[in-house]
Image (cartoon, rainbow, N blue to C red):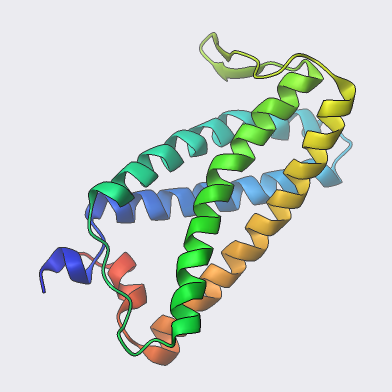
Length: 178
């Protein structure tokens, strides 16, 4: 078995850990936005917008890397239900990493709020302003953020299970290079 079959490609590992930090930051920033009515709320929004777009771009690159490289196989003795849960949860994470920023962008477009990325760069609106659409997208964005949080917790629990209990190399494949 080659090293790339025992470990994820270096770029895949870098993207994984960079996005993990970014997603955790986004979850905390989002929780702060929901809980805040102070002037800090606007500061959090100004952090949340460009970070969300950066994570969207990284998610697209990450999917490309996933399709372009070979992943290490799951342990042969892993129960089928756990192997299925691993595959489903990974694709759920990818889906959420793509859909949440797009929903946020569409939501802000429906609110008539531009997404300024700094240095005079502004994203075009995805939708025309519409209060009902904004309300629907805001609710969907919030629910999916909770789903992302729960999925990240399950992913973390599974990683710790593989690293501390099974000790089967699954966690090591994402933490160490060959």
